[in-house]
Image (cartoon, rainbow, N blue to C red; front, side):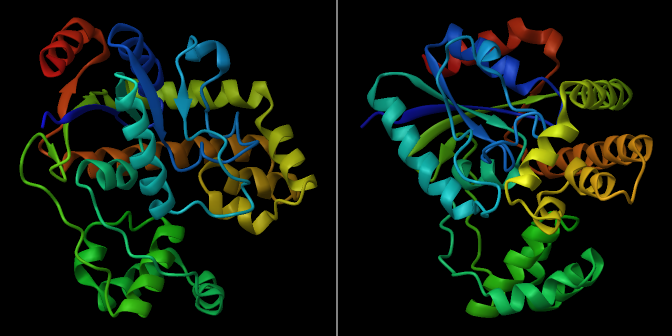
Length: 303
């Protein structure tokens, strides 16, 4: 039986993934699945840099606005939803295009990772929430060195979840990786397109993009979410700029400090994304000025 084919468009924050994915979808009869761990949340539009209706150019997009930001959307939920959406898109004779920057989301599909079903341990979470990111990283390293080598060690939510799984199962089960450059768990063929970015240009784009978000009302959006029951604690967990916006709204930080800290945090995140993607040698990297090469590569892959 002929394998279904999937395209992945990935890269750090502000690199231009969403626009490129739309161009590819228009050119190659595609539909887009978002692989962004914050764009799944309703009401977090400006805050997560969610693509607008106009920017979508009538291309169907999935896994945007899926759950309330009060609840946590897990990697297992992402995998389950995405597997189903991929099958549905392929059934229509269209091309599934996964676009985003959340490395573990993308890897779960590309390597068809089977994720453990472990229920939240609220008592343990409460204890771990009091600890610093470095303390959490050390706990995980002692419990499960392998998982500590694969995870974003600066992401407290991911660290807590990994510790939770390791506590329940003794260790986080080995995440299978497929050495075949184009096979996804044996089920699909995948082309991973990475957007190459120059650090100085990316830094500038992140700063400009965040300042645009401030003008578009990112603070008001966060304030409205809080009024609708999103706690300051949960806003901090959502991370990146929201950590500082919540402090600003509580009067603990000036607007200028919030902007400065948020831009720095986004840049640190972009560096972590680059490090994560660098490990996957199957990714084919292109600059945005090389669109003709990207289109030619895609066309050849889909033949």
